[in-house]
Image (cartoon, rainbow, N blue to C red; front, top):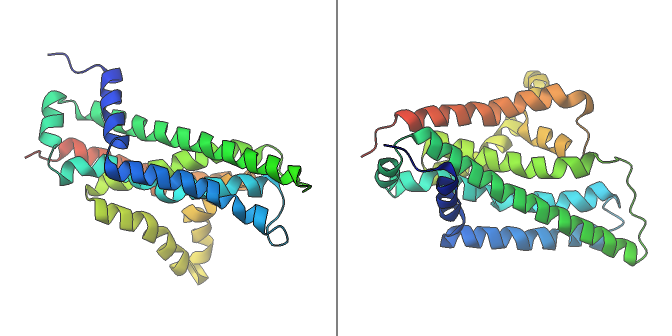
Length: 242
């Protein structure tokens, strides 16, 4: 028997990702935070660098604060609510379902990144309209890094969700583990920490300063995103559905 067409599967997973009460609240809150975050560089010109990187990074950071929880939910809700039996009966090829879930999460991240970009440029226009001189010493780096920054944060949420299959545990680890790593990566671990610190790696991406740190960035993304996502896909493919 032929499986469901991937385009239809994607539409179904998109609806599951965005058409729940919790997802709608998270999306709305993320959008409001992105807009509100522009008040920081606008309201504190003496404390915040008046650069394009600053004006673009604040809405991006705000977008990536809560939105990854939606990607966690997309990968965990069916297991916690025990609806996977229906899903995998209709489409027994679990890999296709997982690809559709990931694609839906990345699509949401892309839209959020574009919204953050729009909000950032609107705040730059507003700043220049009131007489600010918004410099651009970093070139196109911050512009090119914003959307990948949001997408990687979404992937991170999906990775933890896929490997744990538990919403609470995935959300806690998503936010706590990077912080814990920053705390323990001192002394002898400091040098290793530069290669495994996801927070610093994301900062390099967002402010457009990857440069010589590209290898460190790739290493940390492999450890914090690719590895748990791969393990999660393997676990999902093998876990018994009951």
